[in-house]
Image (cartoon, rainbow, N blue to C red; front, top):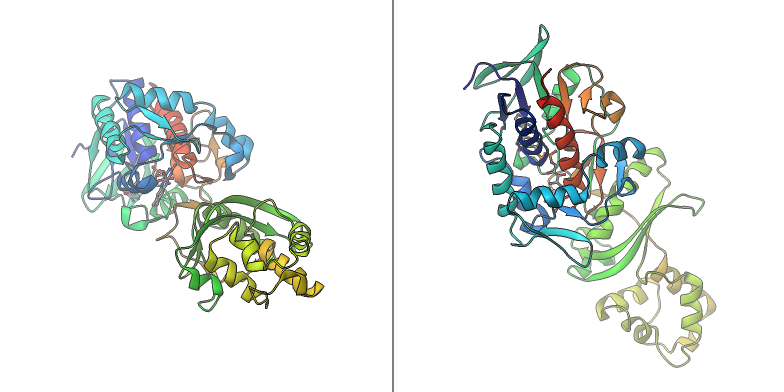
Length: 412
Ligand SMILES: Cc1cc2nc3c(=O)[nH]c(=O)nc-3n(C[C@H](O)[C@H](O)[C@H](O)COP(=O)(O)OP(=O)(O)OC[C@H]3O[C@@H](n4cnc5c(N)ncnc54)[C@H](O)[C@@H]3O)c2cc1C
């Protein structure tokens, strides 16, 4: 264990490894040490994208992110864009392929390829990766810092905090980095919430009995006035606890944040994306002897079709022409604008990212250096930035890690 280092990076996840690689490449003379509390760093890279690691997305821009201002997020994203990410991985021997959805994965479909390439690039750049070395404190000492833990301490003029957020704490990212940031003079956003997280419904809700049913659907956060505050259309999974799948994960942070500000905000689901209640009502009216169950089966699995009819109080096989106007209306709204009585979310153990963190307003975005504490840098999920499903969160880690790395690598 060295007693001093030019740069200490706390956290060797996606952002910390990126910062270590670029600090070393920018200035091969710099002594760069990465400390990670986990027995095996990079666990989150290995589980990402179902073990395939969705490294980035073909179309990244600030509109796919929330948290600090989009303008601030854009300033960092443009410093290391998708073409640079692709070239960076190619140069390390990892070819990326773009799927129909725009998501980019390694050609091998194996996240291990990504982690191994990052670890070996960090070693080649001269960085030392030490683990398990959980950091318990970072304290100011003169112009520099003392970074310490049960393993001892190390002195350095530059610290990069790349400790991630709170999601999937068993990987080592348990939110302790936020406490370190606060101890060095930073504030945190008023709320730190699970994002990209499944949502729960009352156990007796009909959706919970449809576990395994997956359909494309539109999820909408609505103000009491009916105004749509956020909407996502994608694959939606009914589960024994409630709802999951990309559309639900994407909408979760918008719903949860909006609910804090206004508890009367609701989440609705449209099982026939693109159809309005009026269109479905008209469709039903035009069915004549055809039944609602038959109409719905053209779009939805039988179980879901029946459950929607039953929830609306309509016998699924009744000829639609015999339905009262009121019954048609109720069924059309159940199909296209069903209000979901969300009871909560599944928590950080099931969340892919964290919403909230260190505000970008407290960071110089051209360097990722703290405005409060010279010599302190941030990158990755510890910052108040969270992206949609699809590779956006890693792209933030690559871009912010790159900016922090080249800045901290420059001779001071
Ligand atoms: C199941 C799952 C799947 C995902 N899939 C994708 C995907 O396919 N595409 C995508 O873009 N994003 C995905 N994400 C999100 C993405 O993994 C994260 O946004 C990204 O890993 C954040 O990188 P980071 O380096 O900031 O933090 P992390 O990857 O969380 O790394 C932080 C590191 O810091 C270490 N650490 C924390 N505290 C301390 C301490 N006190 N001392 C020392 N070390 C410490 C941790 O051990 C960890 O290694 C997924 C997330 C999850 C949970």
